[in-house]
Image 1: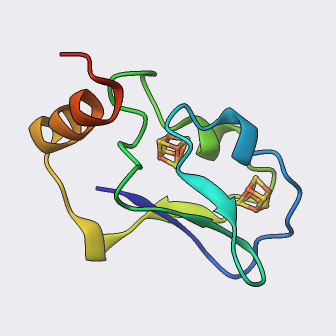
Image 2 (image 1 turned 60 degrees about the horizontal axis):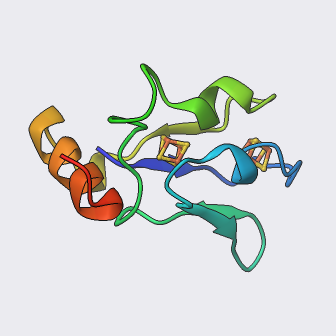
Amino acid sequence: MALIIDDSCINCDMCEPECPNEAISMGEEIYEIDPARCTECVGHYDKPTCISVCPIDCISKDPQHSESEDELLIKYATLTGKL
Ligand code: SF4
Ligand code: SF4
C-alpha cells in the first residue's frame, strides 16, 4: 500500500531526501508521494522511513492504493532492477 501525506504537512523538507525510491516531491502546496514509486520502503527498510522522520505524523497508508507485501516487493524489483 502506498502512503499518502495529508494536508497538515508543514513542508519541513525532512522526508523528501530520506525516501529511497524518490517517491516524494513538492506538490502545488505540500509534499506529495507518487504511489507508483512508494513501496512502503519494502526492500529497503523494515518500516517506512518517511513516517519515522516526519515530525507531525501526517503520513499514513493510502487505502486508495492497497497492495500486498508481494506486490510491493515486485514494485521494488521493478524500480531498482533488483530481485
Ligand atoms: Fe518513500 Fe518509503 Fe515513504 Fe514510500 S514509505 S514514500 S518509499 S520513504
Ligand atoms: Fe510534510 Fe512530514 Fe514530509 Fe515534513 S516530513 S515535509 S511535515 S510530510
